[in-house]
Amino acid sequence: MANYDVKQEVTDKYSLRGRVFNKIREDILDGKYRDHEELKEIAIGEELGVSRTPVREAFRQLELEGLIQIVPNKGAYVTGITAKDVQDIYMIRSLLEGLCAKWATENITREQLEEMEENVYLADFHASKGHLDQMADLDNRFHHILYEACNSKQLERLLVDFHEYVLRVRKKTLTNGGRGKTSNDEHRSIMEAIKENDKDKAQELANEHIINAYDNMVKNGLYNIYGTNEN
Image (cartoon, rainbow, N blue to C red; front, side):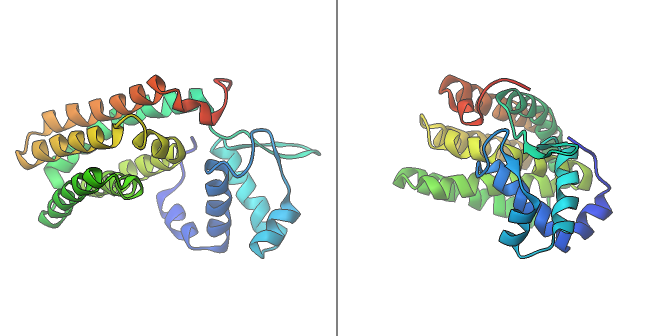
């Protein structure tokens, strides 16, 4: 994964280039394009209502992220996220989420903690009703509250990116084998550790939470939605 200048990334987010890049990346991660499929500048430009220039610039950025490969004189081809990539992301993310929870314990605001508590209670309610889509949305929001609370733009950016890379498999995981309810129980434990100002416990629980999510994914064979283990 490439490291980008944070100020430039914020500026680009709402620019034409940024919007084109984010849309193509979202389509790749959502599975709109198959592995090794060629991405055509003209077709994508027409679909998005833009010229080839911002599409070409987006391709370069996507290549830096490892989501496509540009072959000179041939074209741009999707490489996407492999099962091995998912494993790597979860292992790295487990360490970063632990650090994030530790820093969040030191920096979380009253408003953020109140939103975190409400999030956990709402997820419990939707779990009792079998509302899987709402649970997935609340799960995403819990992690984003945690990222915001750590008070580090650099760490938040990294975690948001990793979170998005595996969003498709995360949605599958949360609706399989009762993982959604278990995941929220783990969120509650992390939240309680933060409330108790126990940063070491919060770090350990957040680390275990991501490892448990990955283990559940492997147990249920859900990594197969990303294809093979090839790099």
